Length: 323
Image (cartoon, rainbow, N blue to C red; front, top):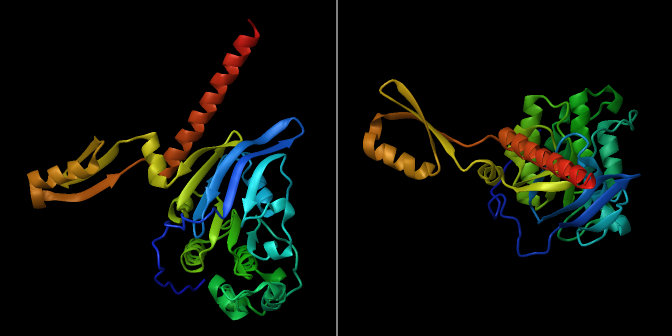
């Protein structure tokens, strides 16, 4: 994917907080038989935000996204996407969305350029002065890095190339909201980095609101303005990677070397400690590094904390029932 980065008018993550949320979820519930998969999910997203939804397998991430896309009916709760209940969304509403599913396995006989051109025609009637639709085929193919495969049949593409095409299908209509379910599965490191550039471009320059799921925590940290952790049918954490790490531990680790010796010191106020360190030793300080809990540490701690709480509640309920 070749992407030309430009300066946006606002810093990443700033969003448009004065406006109504683009996605608004309140008390979302989803029940399959007697099992509650989602039980009171609540969150909101504003224009231009990138939200990453994390959670263990089976937590309900894909179910949540399918409800927001209008592909699955919820059991209860209030959901709004672009001011519309997805259950009532019409074709004009759907034209404002982009969807990249976990996998697509159709259209094998089509050529890449022909398929994208044909799909783009469906969005043309929903073009507006503010948002011309569709995205030009040449620009789209260049954006996702399929220039050399434009004339190939889709059945001949590699797994990574097929995934790039999935992304192209998702953004051909210049969506205002883009849903990405495990979008970089099968990507090599370069393709993953290029995809991250595409996400930043859509957020910064197109004001696209993006909600994605991933099991790649490094990817989540690089992409997310905010991270949502879904566990036990609820959102148990909501914030930036740094905010979440501070909830797990307020301490930072400061590492440095001086005179060939290496040191490490935990502190609640890294800025003050570093300032005092340089005041005392000046240019003798080298290899300075300040770090907090990684997103992986934070994620595991929060999920474990939630699971421990659920087990404690279950034991308490069992004991009370036996009295």
